[in-house]
Length: 221
Image (cartoon, rainbow, N blue to C red; front, side, top):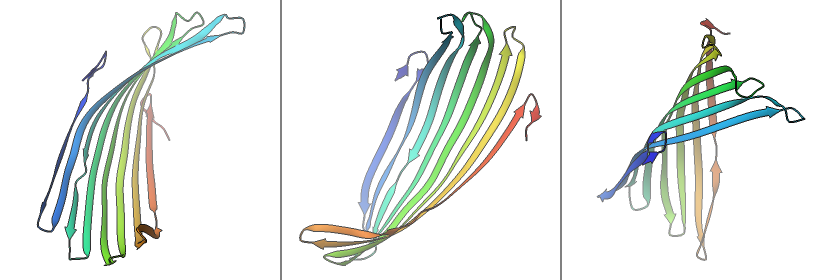
């Protein structure tokens, strides 16, 4: 497809499923390109309606995305099944922000700012479980979900005076690391045609963030 005044977008996906002996598998994934445009104008007025400045802004975003989500089930015996579901998700975002600050007459430019932002999101996961049929009416499942992710952002902003000279430059970074562990234990009982599932699960998560900033060539604390 095509987004007016912005560019190409679209997606492609694939799915392949099959089995070989005791193994059943599904291979799936896709790539996408998304775009988004926004504009926002703010005009300020005094109580009597007199213009009192304002701001005009535009925002353009482009997302390149990749996702891979395969799945494998293995029959370990007549009553045991092992399920393994790895996953990989990746997104790279390009963002352009443009803002113009106006004087009281809402026509004259006081200053303008341009900010380019690049953000990468990446997630690597593994969901696995072992299921055992205890009888025709009951079963138990032991599972573990592990997710490790990062989000790294770089911002480069330059602000200009009305005459075009540089008023301020800022370079900022933000690096975030995430980890989540989720074990679970479930039991299933069949009673009069109904399945009752009960059990216990837990979640442990960590988040680490590192920020940096350089303003007018000087590193900030």
